[in-house]
Image (cartoon, rainbow, N blue to C red; front, side):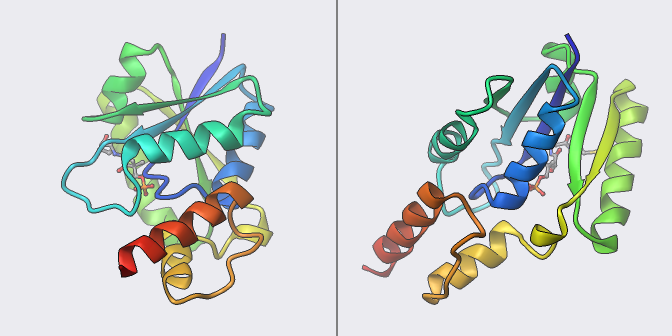
Amino acid sequence: MRKAVCPGSYDPVTNGHLDVFVRAAAVFDQVVVAVLINKTKSSLFTVDERIEMLREVVAPYPNVVVDSFHGLLVDYCKTNDIPAIVKGLRAVSDFDYELQMAQMNHRLAGVETFFISTNPLYSYLSSSLIKEIATYGGDITGLTPESVRTRLYERVAEREH
Ligand code: PNS
């Protein structure tokens, strides 16, 4: 079975992420969406909440599963017998860092990285921008799955009280 991992923070998942998962799932037998557990980075949603939202949105795709990991991505790949990483590339600004990580992951463990060119509809999306817009009451319709949009507005409102 050809497996690939789509690693990230997913705080929260956007339609841009989902587009990458679905396109990767058309090429690989199984796609593992792996949420990084990063205790040093502050997040709006807990890892469990992010996993729950991800599981909801990938439910229609039987070969996409959700998991979490901590430590090095290549160690997660080794433990789970995953030879490939799939990332979305939004713009040239993503490229330098993504190339550096891809080369390092290959150097560390021979894990290959495949880049999917982001759908231009979503090339300007990022979880941070979406959180900022939601925080100030802006309209994020169409930028995240519906269930995520609802939770985002709820969380932002909770934070205000
Ligand atoms: O969504 P993000 O936060 O941009 O995702 C970054 C992520 C999780 C893909 C990257 O930080 C990562 O792979 N972290 C795991 C630690 C690791 O393996 N670091 C060495 C990278 S060469």
